[in-house]
Amino acid sequence: MDRHKLAALFFVSAIACFGQSASRGADSVTTIKNASYCPDTSITASVITCSTAVGFVGYMAGHSIDVLLANTVTGATTINVLGLGAKAVTFNGTNALTSGLLVVGGIYRLTYDGTRFILQGSVPSAGSGTVTVVGGGNLTSTDCVTGGGSQTLQTPSANCTVDAAGNIKANSISVGATPPAITPGTGGGIVSGEGTDPSVGFPAAAVDGCIADSTAHGYVCSFNNDALKPMTRTIASGTSALGTGAITANTCAAVVTTAATGTVSTDTITWSPNVDISGVTGYGVATTDGLKVYPYPTTNNVNWRVCNGTALSITPGAVTLNWTVVR
Image (cartoon, rainbow, N blue to C red; front, side):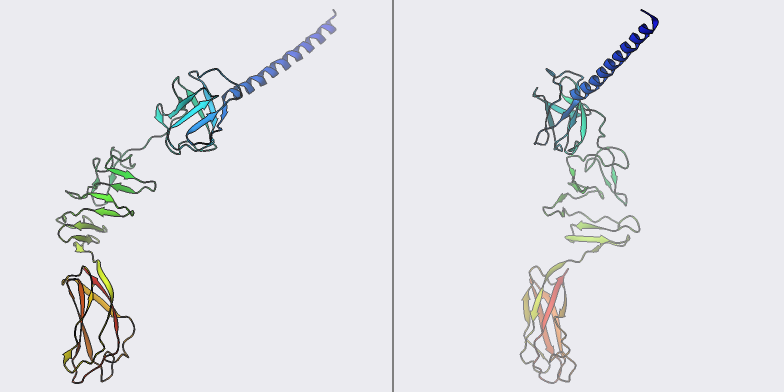
């Protein structure tokens, strides 16, 4: 065979070999993809069901799959590949998945270790640390948190929980030597046991706070490090209609009494007419006016005495008073 024919034959053989090699390379890539890509077809969160295009007869340690998730996980999760049986899905070793750790639409690589499928990559765990309250009080490790850093709040102990919004709900918060118990109220408020006033006010200027006082049976507050003072609260409120009968000179009308549950004689009544009474007979500025109103509290009542200090008899017009009892 002459050299020209030999060269042509070699060229044709080379092209054929190259084409076969390229074809095998493409098949290899496709085969790897089909053996690992596993789209989730389940409709139940935390129960993954998927199949790869290339089947295998059983689970083998070291086998990895890429799962396209159909649902956001809500807690501990299992996966069933090709109907070979459910296996637990964990992260950072044997930790069960937690709500929201894997989300719908994400592709996650899971590797079988002979017992379970483990999420690849490290998932950060909860931080640790303590919370320092401005003014020197601390949420101690036995009260609300454990750990020793200075910035990050760790997963709380059994005495304390943190809700999704980051609000601390604690059974006890250490502020002072003998802190009272604190528990979350059913409506989202805070119910606090009574304690004893500290011997001094809050420890620094520009610090405000209140304490549930066991002596006053109410909150006492300090603002900008001033002395603790009782917080005013409303005991009762309502309206009272004053009398309209004639009041003779230099006498007082019969007392008008209105129920005000919870009121005691040491409480204070704040009051005002419900309209402008400057033109109402008896209470205005005419020579026939001059009546005076004297309010006072008694147990569970507010009382109104209207007196006439003039030398004339006065028949007053109708007046209604708005009132609040504060303590």
